Picture (spheres, each protein chain N blue to C red):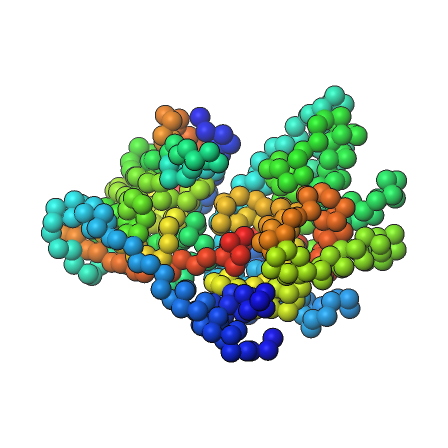
Length: 138
Length: 278
Length: 109
């Protein structure tokens, strides 16, 4: 393909279009998290969230959460129409306070995991997942 | 102008880092090795043929490496039940003629194939429906229906790892030639042929999608996009529609010919169905 | 009851006492989110599995609340202690009131 001036400009526009994917409002997620923590500021240690940096399709995004010693982990998708994703309550026979699942993300956004520890404190981790759009929408 | 539009599409994600592990090997359940790279058959003007699996992200690749993680296997289970279920006026099931599904190993890799009695090229779906109508005296399934996709997934699953090996000459020569012509014919308002994306630009990105060679050794395929099994002809329809053209219908002589030709471009790749794609 | 709902679970058949084992579960379910519209523009009502519980010999391993953001064909992987031989019970609760159950025996050597 001959790279004409017009083709180059159009290619650059295409790049710009992808680069400015909208970051959605996270107010609903923040409210849900505050509801869970009772307004307490969560710490940043003791919880990990494993999610792809780029998801090939937002319909099925694999994630894993782990918070050793937690009694409960909640997962939120800050940019979804409703932020709740899942709540994991760990019983006495849970060998680890971890779980993997597959979730839906309506677009590029932050996934947030908040753990409630046995001592009543909270820990939070958030990661951005870029959700890509298929080639032809097909 | 079409060229510019395409340049914009390709350019859109030229900046995206290479995220697929194109060097990875596909091993299912720790012991079933499936060929995802093979020397190109003589009739394919590329050095190597590559399964769509190698173009996918690590996460998507992983879903196909364990049958429990592969949601497509749900539908194989459904088809196993159907396999032994008597249906139709003849009082027969698939099982009553063919025995266990595993006995069908080796069938998927050679389809589409010539049926001498009928004097036509038959896809697996056509053969399944012929069995249903002629031998079981049951209603045929819709060509791209869930029942059909499930049965195709079962038939593929028992042939996993076997190399695709469809005929290109002899009685299928005419259909194969028609398929080849269709593969290189530009369609739609975007004036794109199969080859424009899958031969000229595989490995490049089209917007955020990593273009594959469009091989069909992995069909039927569980797509994350719609969370169900997708058949070859449904995929063909989607692709042709995306060129903004009126498409041929599923099961049409044109798509049967195209399936034969596209399958032959993957001769040597392992059967993967049900595969997992984005 | 939603159509074609089939639970699948993977549990090792044997373990040593106190060993942590990995369990995977997958259930075929559409998980209709309540966000989609049909071709006439009407909202398709939400219809999901909203809770998933795993117990071993009557003691809880994990109790999950699912929102519509869980993908079609819900998958979970987690770890459990197996103090003695016994039975894992898996229960999925559907919005429509249906309950889907599966169980697996495990032998502690």
